[in-house]
Image (cartoon, rainbow, N blue to C red; front, side):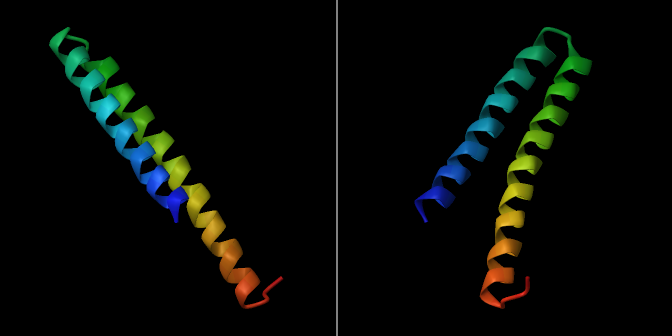
Length: 67
């Protein structure tokens, strides 16, 4: 259970960091870099979520003995 809370904080931290960097880059007139940074942040979070979904499917497979 504590791993889930840690993951939520990790995703929230990534989101806050990306948002702050996005604002800084837009203020500096670097809109394209800000957009690429946002896209990279989304990809990182999606990778974290995909790992969790993989764990979920593995646990379901073990519970129902589907090898």
